[in-house]
Amino acid sequence: MSSASPTLRHQVVRIYKDLLFLGRDYPQGYDYYRTRLRKAFASQRHLTDEDQIRKGITRAEFVKKEIEALYYLKRPVF
Image 1 (cartoon, rainbow, N blue to C red):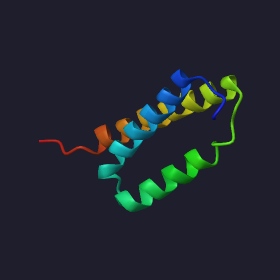
Image 2: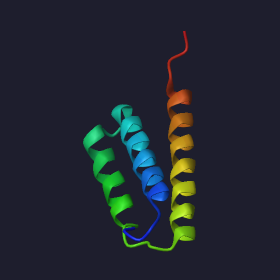
Image 3: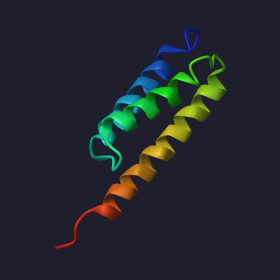
């Protein structure tokens, strides 16, 4: 991603940090979550085409929403 625009790099770092933050309460543990997240992002590290990077960001945003929905449904009802 070295040749991608700084804006895209900032978006990737932001979504990575957001997803990492969501991993605190992951059912299988934070270490498991962090390892899988790191592998997922590392597997896309070679991307240089801005359209492909944008697709990856869109996919990461979708995953973030799914995890948030999972946590919302898992919350205790009083």
